Length: 498
Image 1 (cartoon, rainbow, N blue to C red):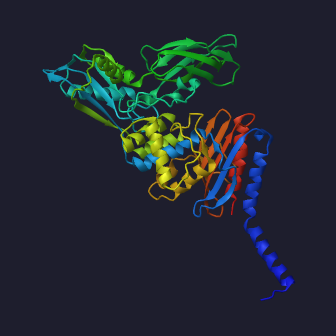
Image 2 (image 1 turned 180 degrees about the vertical axis):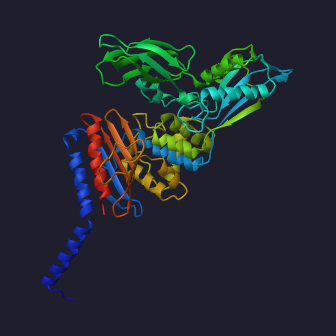
Image 3 (image 1 turned 90 degrees about the vertical axis):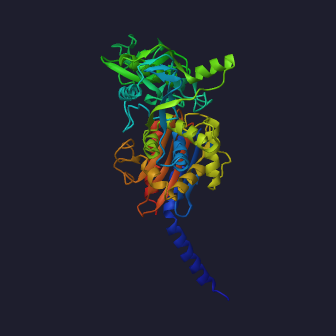
């Protein structure tokens, strides 16, 4: 069939006009991305962006989406979503008080144990529905009394051996380990493995702040205070340095001048020992005689190995304490970006799938899980479950693909989505997108560390479409706040996408 050239030209014009109209919002979004990556602050940066329609998996806009980049805390969504599926939303961790030996006429000729199975919420100040440390110790003491124990001739043992002895990923930074966000995870955790260190601020820059108190009491903890005073309003720029199971802590950096006090948070060196010590003290106050010392199962194992005694004694359960359900743990982990919770979930996933409560087993299980769901894992380098390691690497395309697959899982998505903060809404990200059309329409997990800023989550557009997205920026110039504000502009553009 012959078509007149003028008619053909008209058809092409109509076709191209329709194409241009259909993709106007796409081109605007792509232009906004190009404007972002062309900004002088991005001159030396690596930027990965992927925006996809959840329903169709079609790419809406992208930039270097196959570039493997450091995601910081945005990687938490992978750990938490996997935990909700592999362990289940109703899964609860347990902690058991038990004893070995014999109990005769109120006298326990044996050891008393607190055996942990990885619960990161035990005794938490922040987790709803959890007993505080004082209430926890009171309940344990009452359960021990109810068992008829009046005197203990053995030791009080904190047992965290359900997980490996290494409590943190090998690539975590030295400047992180002594601080609360660098607290490693054991089989036995308590108070989110942190303590509060209170300073009396210096009134002038020449007067250093002094340590006023430590709460709760951490036995054997020793501080070398090298903190200096800085101008008013300078904020917390102090860091606590110290290794796991080491009780020497150096504190360096600055705190602002003032007339009051200032609290920072540090990581408890050995949580199993700390909890055993606290229970030991509580038992004595309650009138239960104790003849032995406070120790840990890890230390007992070393002693037994040295003398060639490897046979463990049978234990009798006194009390079992359950954590809140996994859905609530994930909600706090994502909403408040709690590193400890995600590291506990990582090892729990490893133990569930392979019987090994190790960092390595957890990583292998998580990557195998998503590979089994069709995610290409080439270029995904995972070092931990929380994103604290600067050696983590994942592409924007991979992370967005995972988010889209979560959105299509009717059993997983409602619980998972609820755990993501709402930008511009009530809660942790209320400061973002205020006064913009995107306020309340973006749910996202953020990530932040030095020269790293990232976001991954979901957007509901004005036309009702749901988009999954990931922004990862590494090695930007200047401060992080301007980068965040520029990324917020991209979020507004996503909401306006047709």
